[in-house]
Image 1 (tube, helix red, strand yellow):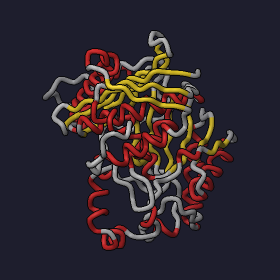
Image 2: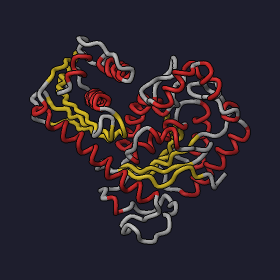
Image 3: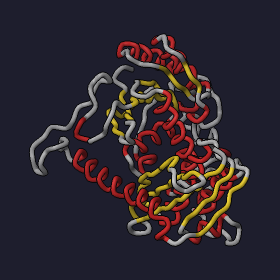
Image 4: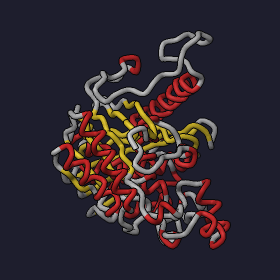
Length: 380
């Protein structure tokens, strides 16, 4: 596929408020639809959502093997900034524009054109569907948090749902169609840095003796479950060692995926939370509240999300309807749960994951998703 047209849009119901984006990739004739992308991104501004739509459209074009891309958007700000005619002044826009430029650099030619909103109806529809999905997900999540089972009338008495085994059928109440790809998300075992609660990103510490024992216990538990097609892992040693124990116990292939690596914490690597906050007080505070802000010399949580979105798509395509163990780190696992729940970045800061813990997320071929289990350590 040599030449494509990308139309992208984003919206926020409140600015900032519940936000989502949509992107569609057409063939050069602008008749044939080659790809669609949409996602609810939590609370964000219109401009952030529009940039996220652009990023999704460019990423989809790269996946299709396009070399020449014409981008059409009704966002004057994004078009003018990406064309180099307007300066980028807002701090939250700078990392998004940098990500977009990095994607642009991978093509032979990319042009940006402003179009009236009426001509961007396809992407606008996808963005609104994403926001609608997000509001529905929020309603269901609030009901579950209150203790109501799916289908209960509000006010009815109901016991909280229990965790489920990996061999149970998919919950029909979600409306999702088809058999899902079930990801068994396993965090790596203990390392020396995790004992001291230090930022451990691209560094490569080995598992401690306890970490190796945790990996062995997790492997034994997963082997007892069975019906697992493969194990995929981050390339970092602590994850790879955990994954090798699981793959050996299951006697299944081990695949290494670079996209599953932990966040690059840059200059904060090896520091504790307090040490990083003392070193860069304002930046550290801003970073905790804005996923578009990168660690100094590192990457932002938005950048991590972009690559994890790609990993998720790859796994669903590689293992349709199968169970796959994914061995990774805190941020990638939280991000996969965030994608499955359709929630914003606050989950990254509020969800705790123990070492060698297991979570289960399902992704359906029609785009639906669900979370079955979070932070199980009963086998340790």
